[in-house]
Image 1 (cartoon, rainbow, N blue to C red):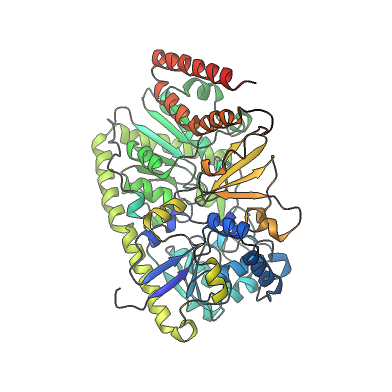
Image 2: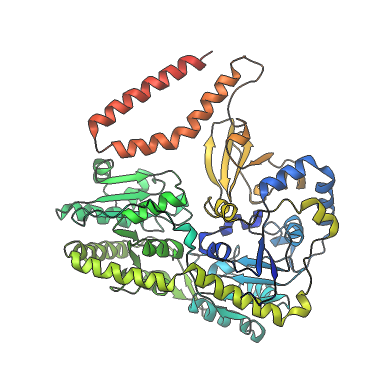
Length: 586
């Protein structure tokens, strides 16, 4: 790769139009951590942008003027809420010879761009997505996205899913687009898995099971990811006389929703804190690694594909139990490198009458749920009762995963192909970058520093806004390596997440971006500075309370299996809280 031409790549994933598209998704981390020497990657740092715009009115006004004068290239009025003129300007201003987009093409059309996608339906977002069951306005969508992918500035579209490439070819039926379709490898960054302190697995006599609804841990995806199937399986597993521990890393749904999906709530209430450990907080990457590595089975009877989670489990030696939904076969071979239960593909996926492409529709199907529970119970029972068969499958899985899911191999193959195509198109892309001199001097220091630690910060942070603090007086969300604060208890709209939203429209939410809760200096806390001299004490205690909540929850989960120690710890904590209340009370 060293003899290839140097390429500067703009990565506009931190902009607000990527909020519903999972921004810095872990599926693509390997392309940053293992980027070859001839590839330099540039992305906006929203905290730096916020501080620059807040302190430099001239820079803010310059960008606003550009946004107001931006001539529409392909974006019609009805699409601007997802890719506003301001986002177009910020995308174009980002340093780079080419732009790199994932999942959905939202290029500035000011320079060449490349796209990597996984499943076809999300490519058409926000006008089509998983689970719709039909493709409305297909002709209009085909013209819209066909104009983007067929544009001369589109250098190529990659996917590691052969079915996705064929679907793109079939849907657009455009020979120009066909010439730009390429298959890539896929893999997990070694940096996201390296941890010398990962625990070993315990004996299979009391196996550990893990359910995690997705790599980005979206609270609303519990049932789509099959969480109710897992709880129903657990009832049957315990009824068989076997022992084990089930850890669920997800937000707990309402009891009535669990009942509606056939979950025995009496069993759940009896087993939580005993054989069921329910972790509702967002867990960082190294914490998820520890959960994965200590588990024997990763349960994901999902309606849709979760590639990153499956690869992560396999590389950490945890056998995946997944459905036969579209895409699963790219990762798991049934009975060889994991367990695939049948029925989801036939129940959820069908051929669209108008376009002929496969589309999915999500709904509750009790018969399918019953079948999945029965299959999982039977297949897991056989492996738990035969440790030799389990170990053989685990060894095959690890060998396969290390060979096929190498993040370094994924990066080398992808960037190598991009470099070759870039060289072939040098006439349209032979320029150092597309940033104007005026913008470069004003914003060149507002990008993420391209170090492993900086990329780790954005990739290991939630890929969509995750609520961290809600005091009633203020809310704090985390997303893409930044904390975002807004006063009160507001309802966010899509473009409110933008670093410049408050400068674009009157009445927009007033937000503050920071790297940590500490940097917000207690803005989210309910107190009056003029009311008392003890404000400093209040701030300190309140911050400690917020910062220590996750630690307290973690300790509680560890101690629950030991009732006496747990009761003593609860007593100590209650005494501490009583003392704190006495100190800060007016």
